[in-house]
Image (cartoon, rainbow, N blue to C red):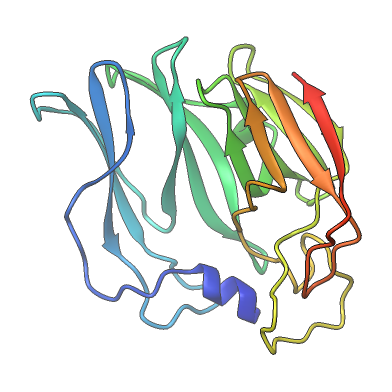
Length: 229
């Protein structure tokens, strides 16, 4: 595992069973409880265990599921279909990526794989629209080759364009011989992009800015692209 991938992994060594709200639905809340994290993350070893817990507003547990080797990530709540959007982090090759997106019905009766999971997509960053209709992501099928969007209403994925550049490292002394792009040793793990690089306007317009970014700095001069979804 490279330096960046190791940094993405959490380093909590002891279990913490305190629930952290990751999303709130119409009648429920969803918690992700960290059960285990490796003290020294290593390639081809467990990245930890989490417990996903869906509760009614009065605290009753409606659904619970533990990971065996992986980490849950809350992506949001689909307000139209009353279900949670949940990602799953795992190691793919030497990358630590979002390797699955599933839908959890608010009543806790169904956990269903999305097209993202069924078609073996992976993502190195994601962004969910305010009402949960769309999940934009940088990734691809076994590669990180584009900017895509998952339409949760139709459960369909389409490619929008080339991706924005990954986050620069600033004055970090890390060095990499590869090009500055997603999937290189500059950006081989899941990352969060800045809001001025991408954000949603309303629930159906994705705004992305691009410039001549480097591994150290974002370009000040940027071109704005709007994608009407």
